Amino acid sequence: MFQLHGRARVFDGASDFAYLPRDAHAEITSENGGRFALAGARCETRLTARYGPAGKVPVELRGAGHCSRQVNNFAAAGPDGFDCDRLIAVEVLTPGGNWSSYPPHKHDEHHPGEESRLEEIYYFEIAPHGDTPGLGYQRVAPSPAGKTDILTEVRTGDAVLIPDGWHGPSIAAPGHDMYYLNVMAGPGATREWLIRDHPDHGWIRGSWDGQDVDPRLPFSRTEDHR
Image 1 (cartoon, rainbow, N blue to C red):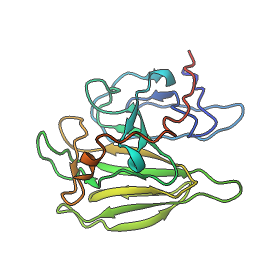
Image 2: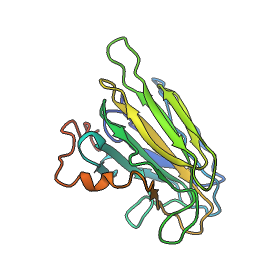
Image 3: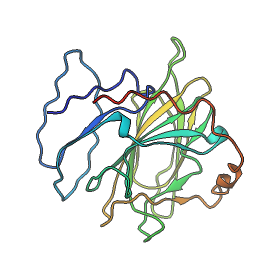
Image 4: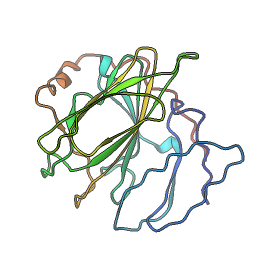
């Protein structure tokens, strides 16, 4: 049995979490209710059930200036990531007014060492300002591998499905911090997150040299409950 402490809001830092293997059955109980994100993917290998403490979630600050964002890599791929068979899942927090998931990038074709084939889901929550609900915008443009073409307003509870395409930016309206949960998986033999930047916009990364990360980052971090 795992006891999860969670957090009051998605903007209150990384949360602890539990990993359940394939073919497992689980029951969630709570004395005070709550909201729970259940991210999953088809897989072949049955791993062990594990608890992930909040204090051990790697927190990464990406970009600079108005492209600054925070990534909670709780189930990221890579040698230092959390071990899963197929699933890749991270949280991205973007201060109001910033562009996130930028430059536009894609991962819908298999090119060894350059790009991995992954479908993706973005689930959004947008911070309100007083009684005014928050909003943001998400862009997905067609790529050589597919025809997904989306420019949509997103609010708390919305999800955007990305089977293919150049995705980004995720735009946080001024005064409204943006959160999104990224869930990815693909058919490749190796679990890895390799992306290809859009050739018209990848140059923006070079402009971040010498720029400071947005001083509003990082968002406060939840204490590590042990």
